[in-house]
Length: 344
Image (cartoon, rainbow, N blue to C red; front, side, top):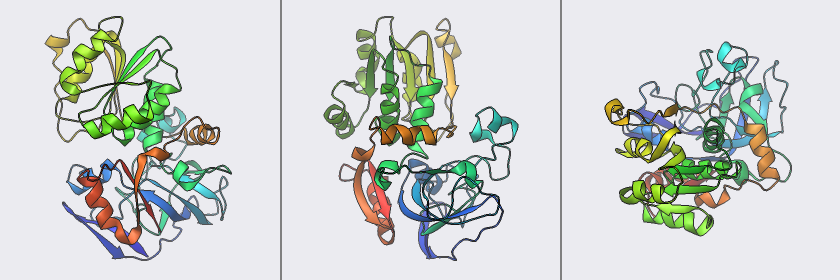
């Protein structure tokens, strides 16, 4: 099969590899029908994910059809259309039992697909702990509608949940990339008083204005003043930092009112400074990632009911044989790209 492979820092290649085999009774083999490229894939390419293993097939955003299952798999069967979770988790350890599946203690637990074990920018993928890592796609939900369920949409759903958003809140989301938009969609489910999005790219800011006209949009250089003008208590009640820029961590706490919640979803390339003397008296609560992606069935139900729609995010479509071009467009943010769909 064709598989896009991490060779070394700065280099991915499309290679021929054997189709994966069922290795454990809890595994499933999935034929990938649609995948995508995530910013986390770029972090691997740039050498920012030390645990990533050279030689692995990259990719962790995908949907497909179950081809085979191990003898212990009971939640899916061959022929089922499924969304694949970015995380693999056993469902039995202390962390899984408490819903902290990102911290699963199994050797394959957490973010393994496309990082420590072969992922889904390929024709087939082996999914460990398939009962937890695969979710059947409801009738009437297309591959494109379900494509982001297991990763960026799960991240947005998790971020909105742990941020404790209330109906009287002003919510600031920093970053209008794909994960930022998914966070926006999931924050809207909480019906806050207002949502503000801060984004430095005029193209992406205009995307928000065009698709979500009730959302207020600002730019980083004016964000602090804008948020204070459009909130009741000197800042946002909830700030969700999704951008991961050089100064967005500082912007997040600066825009928060005293006693606010600041949720850090972004993956940073370098350490961030927590300037406690400057923050003294703000009494902020910080919550940090990564995602606990255990709400996929609920997310798919919301999609099937028409309450979440991420299809506007798909701006470009390529086949697996064209994945080099897809990466070039996505990595360099060319041609107004937001997300790429990669088909077989």
